[in-house]
Length: 237
Image 1 (cartoon, one colour):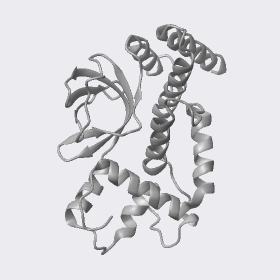
Image 2: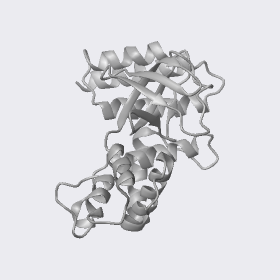
Image 3: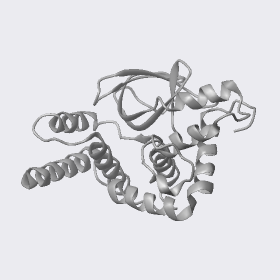
């Protein structure tokens, strides 16, 4: 990471490059294939290709456990690439400020966030699964003008100081489907038991369906996909 104090996107890019060098393409390809199986496959010419690639690397770096035998001299408690990278620094020449910012990344939040207030440089969001409220600050040259109050966004929020910032891998669920998503989440906490991971994966998949079915009203796509998914789960139970 050097002696400078990179911003969030620089840290994420640096971790991604490090992961490529340490684990190699095959490990990342296997992880991505499994991720796309669960969240939906994207192609290079898809409009969401860049953001979904960033979403995958957020997952790969911060949530996916790596087998310890793939990396030599790794503490047993380290599991994700991010944790392994942090444990490998030791007495490095990384500046104290950069180390602090790197540690902040471990306080990430990955969920569905309902936008309660939207300003050009600031969002107030509430995690609709945990109900926790978070302030999100815009990065330099970033604007939230396109986001709407009552819209739901999905992905990783990374702590950077007192506030949080959006990952480049954020999924924008369309305005008008927030009630449908909230009902889905509520149903998974009552009648049907689903993990946070399963909820997020299914909604990421539905979002791709919505983008590809441009001629279909978003609420119809979300409702039909969710209803079919819940019915399948009930039958399995």
